[in-house]
Amino acid sequence: MKLAILGGGGFRVPLVYQALLASELIDEVSLFDTSPARLRAITQVLGQCGPSRIRVRPTTVLDEALPGADFVFSAIRVGGLEGRVADERIALAAGVLGQETTGAGGIAYALRTVPIALDIAERVQRLAPSAFVINFTNPAGLITEAMQTVLGPRVIGICDTPTGLARRVVELLGLSESDVELDYVGLNHLGWLRRVLHRGQDLLPGLLAEPARLSRLDEARMFGVDWLRLLGVIPNEYLYYFYYQREALAAITGAERTRGEFLAAQQHDFYRQSAERPEHAWKLWQGALQVREATYLAESRAEDENRHAAGGGYEQVALGVMNAIAGDTPARLILNVANGSTIAGLDAHAVVEVPCVVDRNGARPLPASAVAPAQLGLMLQLKAVERLTIAAAQTRRSDLAVTAFALHPLVDSVSVARTLSRDYDQAFGLFD
Image (cartoon, rainbow, N blue to C red; front, side, top):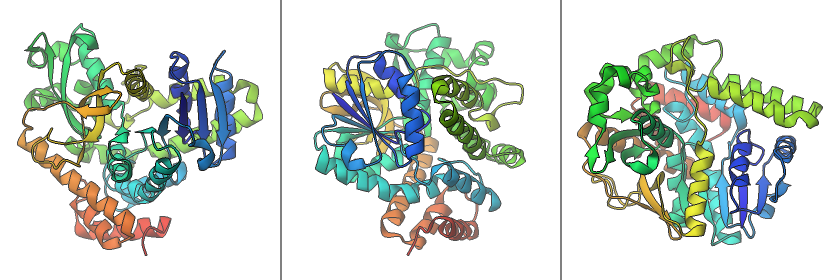
């Protein structure tokens, strides 16, 4: 089977490739990227991963990558890391959170990504009409919903944060993921683990009642044991920006560099060194990856606190989706899919992040119990922001963008929303 990876020169592509090496599913990978230099570096890394039966075909022409693809993995970054830096700095200059997927930065990122994602969807429909698109391009839920307007349920959004959260909780309980059923509900980067069912019994209340054991969880150190116990659920780590907005803003503002600036410098060094020493591309990539993972979401942790990064992230989710579809071996995964009737209060086309059954027909959300008002209210508000953002990107209307910025809970003034819309337009030429 053939996999086309869009954003094939991206830094994390070797993670996907390593997962493929452990599987017999894919025998051809087409790498598409707009940057020949990045594509060359990542192709060198893949070539040094070890013996492989997979044929790797790099290209800078999208229409060459897609024909014959059974799966399309989309992990593009429109504007590159320079765009991410601008997303962060423009928000911070306006006095609001600068983060690439959450808040003003996420809206700006989506405004320039939606038109490209829709063009990709139309090309997939023409050149690989039977392919499933696995979308990791951020903001993942929003981009998935936009692409589904062209390809329908053949677009499935993935994210590694719910899977990582579930894994940490299940391991803390001394079980394996196959032993439990997970009740997780939300939007991408805005979700909550509500129950962990083992033989019909919910084990989460017992964990929340044990502060000493709970404190070993990354999320407990991030949010605080007392807050998790008050919530009665365990939030996705990105909710730190909502529950601790002032602290997050202060930490990012006070840092020497934003996350985007750190990654831009690090990746510049990696791609430069790979060009200078191509025979060491694999070792250079491994070293850069270790530093990258260790500093993820650093603003949410104390200076002396290490992140417990575990393997099996988004690349394993992607492989799980492909295996379930191609092998027709049903799997349960937390994915971004159309709501249907899963969450009362959201319409059928709203893309949500929930446990799904995946088989040869694609991904179907499992039934979910009623969502708590505070959680549903936040989801409804963010879904309205997502849809305004999609409409603004499609029509190039600044008034819709202003409304999207203003309605986001992490933007505290309509005046600030107007400033953000103006400054992002000046940076990226978003509107007519």
